Image 1: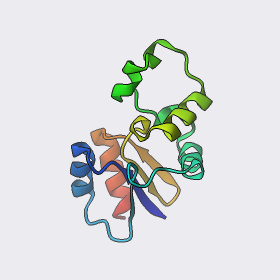
Image 2 (image 1 turned 135 degrees about the horizontal axis):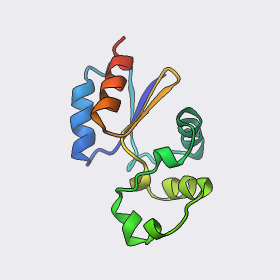
Image 3 (image 1 turned 45 degrees about the vertical axis):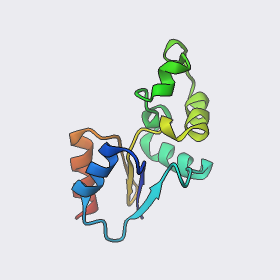
Image 4 (image 1 turned 120 degrees about the horizontal axis):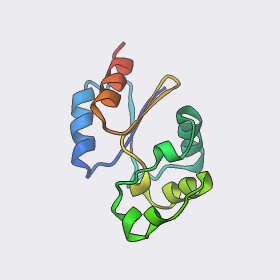
Length: 117
């Protein structure tokens, strides 16, 4: 299975989707209009190893809510991501049992190689 969770209004996600093209056979899920389900998040976490690796500490709400001053547990990360799409580190790319999280050049390049082999 090949799937990309992204935010349509995010210019970084848009740039990465263009970079990963062609996206033949890849299912795209825009997380604002089609929120991720607990089962989808569970799958991402099982592939990445934990919920914290899927959590974006760059989200504006992270500081606004004072979360940067708290010790967050795995269940906190899970619940926050499910509650508010902005807490998901984007994009999340699933390729045949592999997961690529975030927008670093290294991650995007690895995802590109996995998508197009």
